[in-house]
Image 1 (cartoon, rainbow, N blue to C red):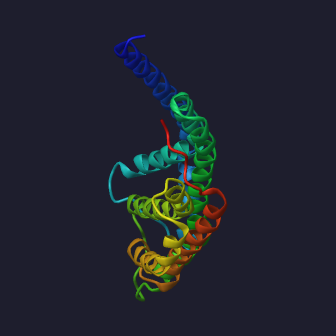
Image 2 (tube, rainbow, N blue to C red; image 1 turned 120 degrees about the vertical axis):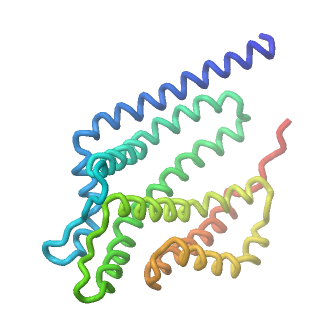
Image 3 (cartoon, rainbow, N blue to C red; image 1 turned 90 degrees about the vertical axis):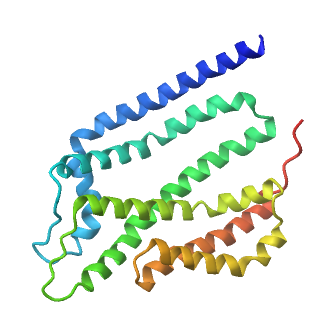
Length: 242
């Protein structure tokens, strides 16, 4: 097979994998779409549970009552279809990997996916109640807290993304050691800077209460330490590829 034919065959394979990814996502989204309002209600429950009796959320734009729940259904469909998406990516890149790279990629993909979902779950079940309790509790007397549903979605998506990435720290540490970019000793030397950086990130991505900042910074630091421990056992430098 000529290089041109080989390149075209890879493009055809890529197109087929992308098509399967899109179809898998659309099937899950179609299944979730009739329940979009219920899914949004579930997403909004951490805030609604902190509002005073009779409190509610509002929609300030004409189209948000339809589009915001649809976006939430799309987000849920993306999360649910993620294993299928990762499988399609794996089947496309696996033939071009060496044996030691294949052994690394499978646990890496699984672990990174689970850690990202764990970060989202941590934000939803532990951080959101604290954050929204603080926001509602600090509202001046006579001020009714009625958040726009679109703004609420943007806010929680930012926190989901921040905590999801924060929980990827062990993967980043193990990969940095695995590829020989840093050593275990160097990771220990910069531990103080990592702690400071974690608190800076916590201050940027969370509301101004000290508790929620700690709830992002402390897990990042602990996960960094976990990454160092895991790297001691599994993070040896990969053999050079030919």
